[in-house]
Image (cartoon, rainbow, N blue to C red; front, top):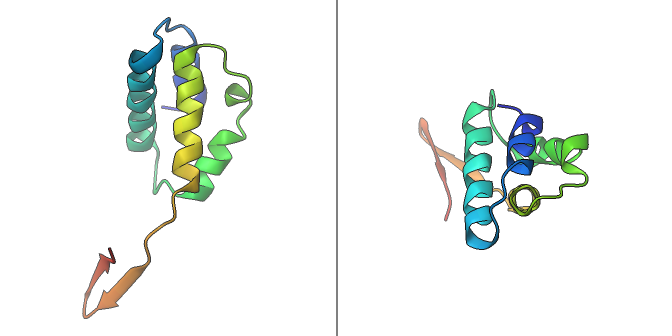
Length: 90
């Protein structure tokens, strides 16, 4: 599912407050799992440049854009190789 379609659906949603935030998180998860390939901060940044996210009007769509911004700004944990497996450092 594209960011455009998710925002379009959230714009038709009249939820507010915590319900709008929950809808936004669900939309974000739907976008992440439907996206082909890895979702990196660079991919999220590109999604934030989509015209559909520039001026959201509903509370759910605004919350979705905020979730995208938070995902873009999360530092990625470095991968460390030991032997044949890679693991994330905590």
